[in-house]
Image (tube, helix red, strand yellow):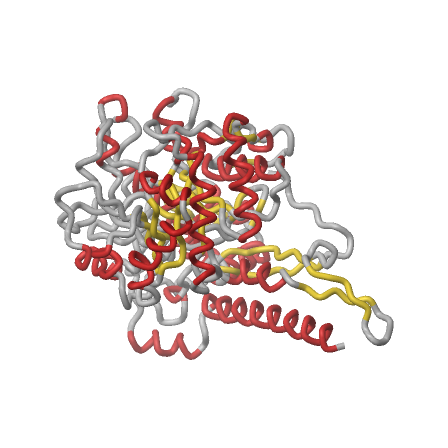
Length: 554
C-alpha cells in the first residue's frame, strides 16, 4: 500500500440536551461519560394500548456496546518482499504476540488457509487491478466470491472486504471511477449467499481526499473527487460500513519539522492546539486528522458513518532527509501510544470516548517496495521474526512490551512521579483510589507485608502508585498531574526492595506468593473496577433490551 502525505491538522466539552441521561463508567481503565438522549436515539414512536407514547429504541444497544467494548488494534500484513516467512509461520508469530485482527491486501489462497481455525479476524482486499472487471459484470464478483473466498469461510474468519486501496492516489489507472460499482457488485454477491451482514464491504482512502484538514472543524473533501465520494458515502451509510482511511502523521513531521512538533505527532505533547472555530483542544495530530474527516462527513450530511483507520504507523529507518524522523525510538513511541489511545477508548475531542478500530502498518519490513528508504522499513518484525522493537498489542502496559533492559527508548527513564507532600489527605486518597481502580495500576506492592507497604503513609503509597501510572502512560507531564498533587522528580525514589519502575518497564517490585494469596482474598481495586464496569454494561444493555421488548409487547 502506498502512503500519502498528510496535512497538519488540530476540544470543546460536549454539551448535553435537556432530558439526557448521564452515566459515569470506567471502561478499559479509563473514566468515561456515557451520554444517552432519548430524543436523539434512533427508533420509532408508538402509542401503547393505554394511550401512552413510547419510543422503540433501535440504536441504544449499539451505543452502549461501543462503550462496553474498546477499540480494536490490528496489524497490516503486507507481502511486498522476497524474504518473508511462510504464511503458516506468520500466523504463529501473530498468535504469539496476541494480535487478533489482521489486514491483508489481496485474497491469496495460501494466506487464507493459514488463518483457518485461528479466530483471528481477517480483512481481505480486492486490488485496484481487479476493480474494472468487478465493476463491469456482476458475474465476475460472483465467481470471485465463489472461488476465492467461500472455500475458506467461515473456517477463516473474514469480516471485511476492502474494494480498492487508496484509489484516488493511483497514478496508473482511473481506479476510483470503478470503486463504487465494484463495491456494489461485491455486496450483491455476498447477499446472494447470505453473508452481507457478516462481511462488511468498504474501500480504503488516504487523507488526500480532503482539500482542507486544519483546523479540524474546517475539514472538507476535495471537490474534484465529488463524482466518486458522494455515491461511496451513500453506499457506506446505507450498509452501515465504516469509512476506511490510512492516516500518517509521520509525513507531516518529516516534511515540515520546523512547523510541526515531534511530541505533537507522537502523542507526547504537554500543550494543546486549539481549533478556533470550536474551542476544542488537540494534544496530538492523529485526533485532529480523524476529526477533520468527521467534520468533512458532517458537512455532507453523513453523520452516522464510523471511521476506521486501516493504516497508521511509523518507520524505523529512512533516507538522509528522513533521519530526524524515522527511527526505532520514534516508531516505538508512536505505535505504543496509538495502541493505548485505541484500547482505552479515548476517542477524539469531537467524539470523546467513542471506540475506533486502528490497524498498524506493518507486520514486516518489505524489501521490494520502491521509493525512499522509509518505504521498506515500517515493519514491527524482521523477516527472521525477531522484533524491530517491543510492543504490547493489548495496551495493558501502556502499549510498551517489557524487554530485557526494562528501559524506555526515548530516554525518559531519568524521570519519576511522586505525590506532593503539600497535598491534602482527601486529594491524595481520591487520586490513589482512582489510580488503583480505573487507572489500571497494579497496587499489590503497597499492600501489607509487600515491599512498598512501609512506610505506611498515604504520601508513600501514593508516590509509588503515581509513578507506576506515570511510567505506564508514556511518562508525560499530563500523566503525572493527578489533579495537581503529582510532582515530577529526577532522583530515583526507590528504597530497599521497593523499586520504582521507569518508562516502558514493568514493576520489578515482586510480591511473595503467600502475601499475594492473602491480597487476592481482598479483591484488588483494579479487579473491582473491571467487574463493576462489566456489570454496569450488562445491566444497561439488559435494561434497554427489556424496555424495548416491553414496549413492543404493549
